[in-house]
Length: 322
Image (cartoon, rainbow, N blue to C red; front, side):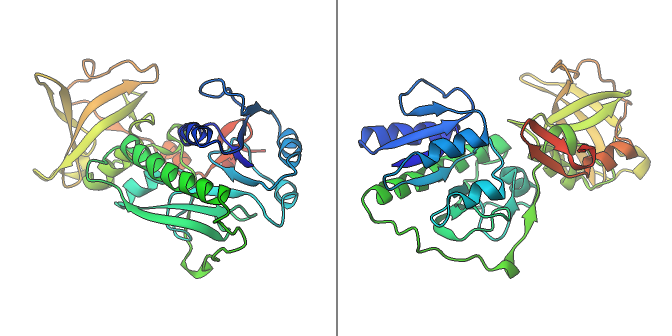
């Protein structure tokens, strides 16, 4: 039996394929599934999850696809030697960590990798079972574009993997160890904590930063007249040079036929922004005036550099955890 932990789009589509092929499976998570299916079991705690997974006596493989729990050492040890496998989307051991697509945008990367690897105590450090390399298409611009392609490629690999395992063509003992000397790790990001814009950066870096937190995330964070605003749909253009005193200042505001924009002076040119919302998702484009400044305080920037941690209730900043 194939046991899948998670409830995302990849899991939903995989469940339909496995059902059509009459392959024995079940799905476990702590939230309601996209649509009711008899193969889904809702469990709340890690202990419940372990109990249910261990109930299966027949040959089984356990795959995590966006599991909502943090697997501790005791939990992982309970499933040795076969272990639990995870789906990952970067060329391990490079780019271990979370919030994959935002890091891809920040580093201007378009090479993707679908990987199924064993979960071990160190993040994303387990031996690799199968993988497939791909290129993010040119139309991938915002995180949502990358996520759509990411999900598609991951779904292809995990479907092929499950079909192969059900036919006895996958040997779980044949894995490739990751060379640790090639490793790099980038922690999770969360727009609420990490998206404060540093207006002393170059215009190009500011554009990449805002784009990395665009849809489906909240956007890049800044202050306007002391109020928090979220910037999206931004692009940088090398059109003129501005004195550092002008960086962050709105020097033009335009209403076009199908959109509007504000032009912000930045290092090396202009940042054009088509969307500016407040914390209640109200559009601020009409309220903003030419001559206003979009800024950020030193304490906000310092806070944005703190590490974001996933815990059992959601996300928090490392410095705020007891």
